[in-house]
Length: 449
Length: 164
Image (cartoon, rainbow over all chains, first blue to last red; front, side):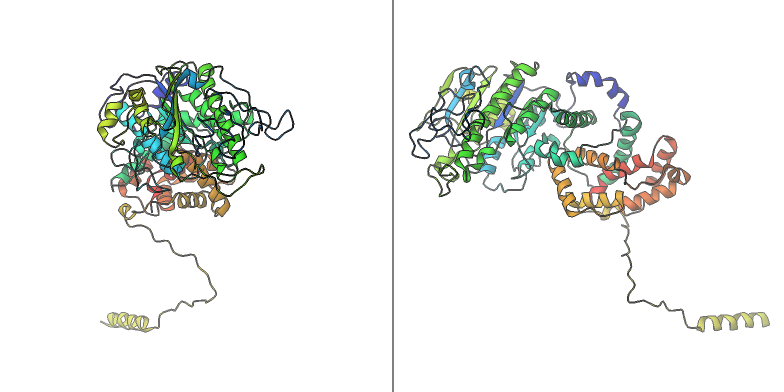
């Protein structure tokens, strides 16, 4: 092993201060330097996922479209402009007036993200399913052969950034809302020119820092970096060298030893914070999405990643529970508002230097299924053309403010645009285009403005 | 001449005696003999994550892991993107358990070569090459602070341990 542990320890203070920016040679031979101009140094990319119906989000029809009841309104008032519903409030918390869900969650942002940024009101999703949609959002391509429980076929935005932009593994994070539905597989593709060594770090906080994580991961023995970890790694590298002689190894993410040490320390600290109730959760954290966002805030505070992808999913309960869907949609908006507020107020290195992008991976059907919930309201699946209708919201540094593009019947943008958009923000758009895997009709959203 | 005849007769008698026969008790159960790999290159298959966890647990605790715990631990590893880091955290947790079965450092120091052979056999189900054994013995002897635990950790974390 060639790593100099002493040097690492000397530098630990600098690393801890978040100033780890030393250039290094990429496997491709390029130095750490994105070729294009960066529009911001950080992107927070919210997969506003689970299947969000346009009618209850951008179109703000609340119950008057879905259930034939005459009450419209905006239940996403951190993200979108518009007045909240005034009747039949079911999406809030149970506190206050005694009615179930009758107390809406207070607005976090003084200005909506729509006001702060640009809203693409009618975007075409190239998939009406979760996995295809998520892959589309992360690969920028539509691959019909993409199957569940398998790695993405084409490179993900994480791999583009790491290979072409020289970003380190801890510069790219995927925070998943669980380990089901192939979510843990989305941090890198099976593409032979990209793959694990360019992959993103991933946590599914509900597991990693939930009960299971506490039982099986939180009691890690702390080894002295120099006297204990160093010999372990030296012996491991010797053993691996012998084994690589027969042409076999393991897929590794490419975290350096320093990054691994930092991640392990972060995990240790995070378990302590959970015990001490110090995770910066949104005010209302009664679902997995808000739980996930709390840990995403922790990751951002610690690592200041160039790209943080946060996956939400609770709205998928809409298959059987429309009331629950409204509550989840309201909470997803609350969680995104919290995320943006946290960046601006608690992570000074990212405040004013971050762009947030949020898109559902797919919409939901125009017509309901036969399932009724406690309010006798119908549920919705996602399989028809209406399920290909979504929105994209973008706000932050260098994003035009108070701009709204497209309308019902006049779509502007594709969900696959997001990959090129992130690539443009972080300075590698030409490289991603030249790689040739992004859908040919895709553009950066900045090019659509 | 007479002496040679005596020896010949003795040998004839000895070799003509019926050989001892092992009596097999039909009710006797035996542990299957584990065949060692003759070469490192015989390992071509990647263990599944469940296989890795199960084998690791058995190796370190000398008992089998329950199906329920296996699923739980597998889920924990799924929740971490860097699988090698996840395995490292898991092994660190195992090493912190009071019932982990580790040889003492004195056993390692008494006969490092035998210890290395045993460890290769235990983790890799093969014997080390001469070069491997020499490197490892030298490493143990050059590091007075090195514990058997750290050596076990390195083997458990190695890439070869992911294969069978």
